Image (cartoon, rainbow, N blue to C red; front, side):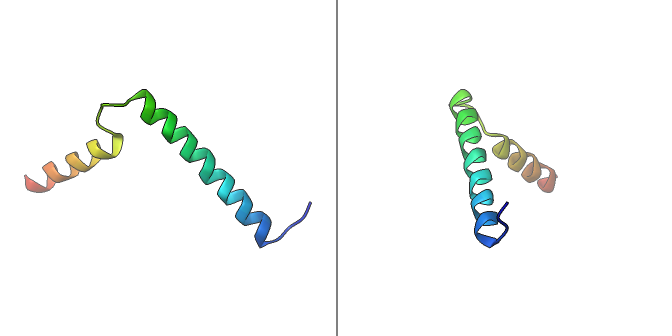
Length: 50
């Protein structure tokens, strides 16, 4: 097996690509609804205001 920065970069790019594909599938399934990030941000804001 070849070891080096190039191989490591390719592996990282592949992982990022896989995550993007999975996130896109989730977005398509829940289109029109608030994202998980939106909910967490709203919760943080409301807790700070109180």
